[in-house]
Length: 399
Image 1 (tube, rainbow, N blue to C red):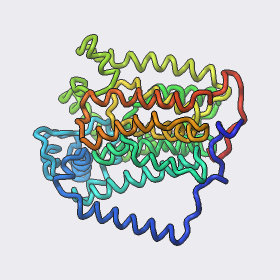
Image 2 (cartoon, rainbow, N blue to C red):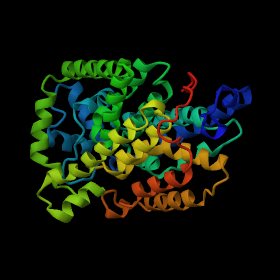
Image 3 (cartoon, rainbow, N blue to C red):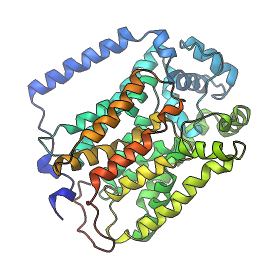
Image 4 (tube, one colour):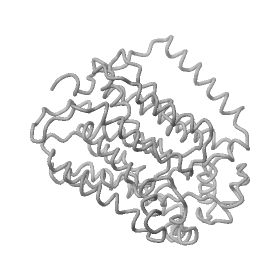
């Protein structure tokens, strides 16, 4: 296998930490903490999605219903939210594992810790991705800090960066530590709709390889999560169902192509949103089956990830943060093969301007982004995949 198709080995790892680097890192961390502590006002906190998680955590810790609309609205206002209506999280009770720790802190302290956790997950994800796909002298992974969906997560306080780290850990350890890789995918239990075809192929891949440790790891992590949440709130699932029946989130407009497909035909037929992902799942099975002998999650899995998100039943712009592995892999590939980075630059800049100008996250102006990332990936990676039936040596244990 040539160098263009081989993720970087240990010799290409990032430079070692010298005393000067450690001092610089600590200095930058202190500056960042200063901005968080002194620059985060109640008003700025209230404009984020963070209050919905903090309110749920407060309810859990104090024995309340984390999906009680009136209680959530009252707590969100304490956190600085100026919304007229309650804004609970639509994620299933699996997401309460992230909200629970916030119940032990004040709104501002919790917000600082929440943003620090998101930032740390992003830094860890980028460093791991660079070790997998990059080279020692390349700094193109720093583009990840300006990837618009990631910045949207940071600005809004959404939890998709936790999903990103889980995905990166899966890609890194699915061969060497499959149980850990499966457990790392736990955050996707909060938003399983984002990568349904990806999950389907993962199940079939495990059966074909007769390696069930990834699945066992995922099931074990979900079971532990369920036990903890049941201990904190034995009625979480029934409360969640009651909240969803009251809100009816399917009536909301979400800038996703599956939603547009439904709206264009009949807005009342909710099942239409799932037609694209069903067809995508059929394609995903064909795509995997014809490449099962040489299947690499670090390669073909990235294309499957992109297709899953583009055709998801619904997805917000910030959910596209999980596409960062595919974007960085394609950027490293384009850099190695001397292909122009201008198309990605134009796409990334346009998306970044939308975020910086604070375009409403529910606006239709975000419909173009997911197909654009997909088009860039195809442009950058063309010619990389081997023909069907041609096998490759297994990747090193570093993958």
